Length: 147
View 1 (cartoon, rainbow, N blue to C red):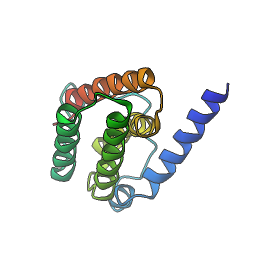
View 2: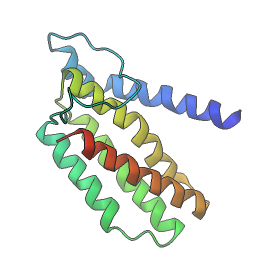
View 3: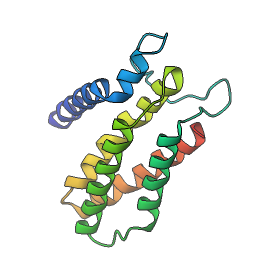
């Protein structure tokens, strides 16, 4: 019960941060009203969504960090989590995406950001490794849905 409350609270906080970000500000300036993210990551009529240049570069950096940084100890995994938190902040602050692709990016971020937060603060090595495995799975899903 406590874990669910903690996760629900984290999701509310993440949604608030994303809503306040420049990414949302850019979406509000479009002709489409800003809507809440769909609950599930989907394709764009069977095709990948088009990410903006900033998002593509940010995600390349995230993927590179996740595949090249050493994660042989809990400290190294926490350091990776801290690095990913910073990269995610930069991704969100520089986002220029709008419309449905923007909303789909938020679906991804609403899962990936809490995982990075968990990795950055995790003291238990087994749980950190589970979180890291889940993050690799989420990253694969990003690349299955965005280009």
